[in-house]
Length: 185
Image (cartoon, rainbow, N blue to C red; front, side, top):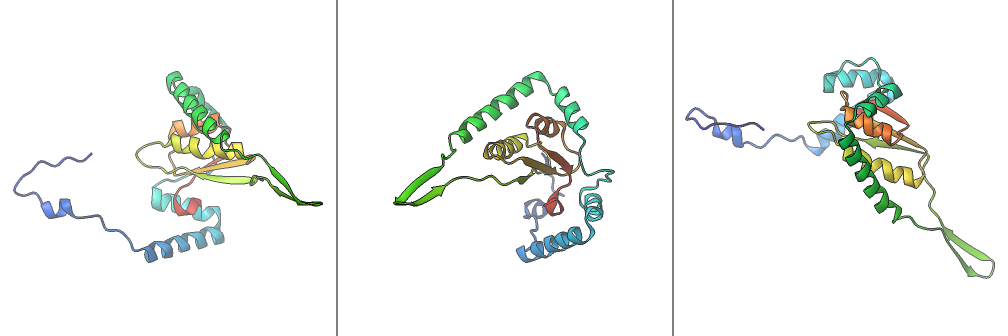
């Protein structure tokens, strides 16, 4: 938190000014440029944007399973218990939402069926910033697992907090990449 002490020289107008926000058209244009660059240049664009936008010079985008396991081993026991308790609460809630297949014979010989079919691969985006949002990871990954998604891929801006890596390991996330923003999508 930034704290200002009043003084006659203090620029009150500057402090009260709202941050400038780009227009939605400008945001769409920038995102489209990023998408095109990634589509055309692949990983080279991801490395470039990681350096340009996140100030990170990466040697690899993919986080090794060893790094995730190491973070998991270093997780304090009390925090691990809290993560596991939160995970069980989330799991309990989502298990209750499961739908059983529905089979109805509308007329003799005509059977209609409703059933859930999981997607094979799902992407999970965890924002970076001042707080490691491991709760977001729990709330995205657990329903995907319960739905039957075999591959759960996590992307998050560079300098992943160890708790994100530890939770990803505990949840058996398939792949983790240190790349954020529109380029990660």
